[in-house]
Image (cartoon, rainbow, N blue to C red; front, side):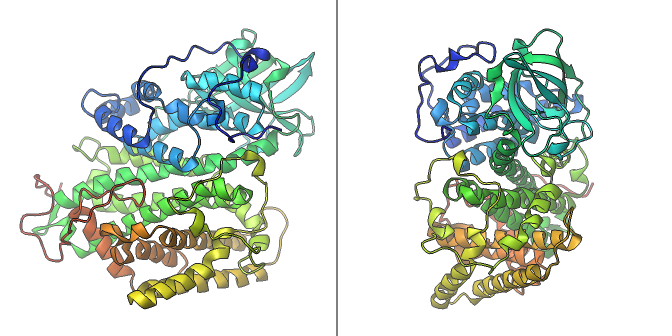
Length: 622
């Protein structure tokens, strides 16, 4: 099988795409002299588009949400900018080369509007199985469609089936040299707005692990009336997204619509999910960015008891907890995205941890922000804050995407006995994650052939003892014992997790409650190890307002230790510092990545401020 995502090959091989046409001819891709799309360029365009009358105008997007209308203007702007290029690997003519870069791109869009990010980003999910299968003919053809701006859906779920892919009843039976498909796929994002869908179908009557296959379907190439759209479903959040479905009635498709091998569909989907789950957490990061931007403004405007909200200790504590959660979520997501390049053999665990952990962490952060916003978190007509209610509704669906939190945690629980911390030492020569988390470390190309359905080890937790020892040596010289104490507490919790896992009695069927709780503790330990590895890998993150005195790391470890049931003594001070810094440094992005730091002195408001931090508007209690 040809390996996808290897050496860049921007020009499709002559004749490859048309040798075995499986879909209608793709439209011509128009190219111009515009500069190639970059993350920095997207930031500038999003600011421009968010002005009044622009495609990302908050008023326009709120109106679409109210009417449950698709955000067509915003999606068209992203098409014109070149976002579809990030959905296509460089091998097939696109710009999808680094997963961490793509996560950063989708995060920025989600920070403006989560519905738009969900609606447009679905095409990455729809195409990933085709790229992973490595069949150049269909891949080049699909690439031409995607680069022309055509959306692609991923038809996995069926009515009544939930996350159980083995329960799928849509069938594909042989018909001459091709296939006939019958059944329903629902609910599916972008099912009816586009013409292309990658469909998982039962090809053996008894199903089973080798009883399902994947097909790339173009509705335009099927006989009239054999593929019918199912109505869009009303949803609590992402109201404007096309959450609908398709019904197939003996729809005939050619032989070359098959993606991969007959019977290989389930394995291909499970491996592809390891990539899409990491991409999904970018939606949560963007939601966190949006929420913190609203909170930062509110802290500088709101007055209570004759003082600005930012001056109240409780408000600082809650704000600091929200900031610390954002840093921790960012750390786990970034580590997972780079792990896809460097340790793809372990991605079944890494992606499950990231998807189970990050959306829940950010959902908790939104709860903290909502508590501080008070009535403004519910009132849609309050200038500048009406977006929060929509944001909170929209994000509630993210934990369900690509396997719910329960599904990912259950998968992790099932392999805990193999992954148990301390069960086996890392092999000789295994590099610390701190090595490949360095900003200057060249990443290996994405290679789906290296993905595995199960792994016997976790490089992050395996590296934890060494990371703690290195930090202790650094802190001894820097005289910062608080960080070392928190890191040692994390290591002790991880060692206890290993002992508790060893004592767990195996059970048949679904994981026990005890196993699920151990899996959740595993996620917290993984997150803490990721924070320590990033701190070790990036000395530059020790500068600037967030990095001084290891502030961001202390915040991450405080959240982790509290998640593990501990009460770190340094936590109140850490949260207070983070919460005070949020409004005091309004021009410093709440991120460890992709942002220019500043060495300008930041004065933390230890005492009530006379003029108030930041705002020209004095907002009193509603």
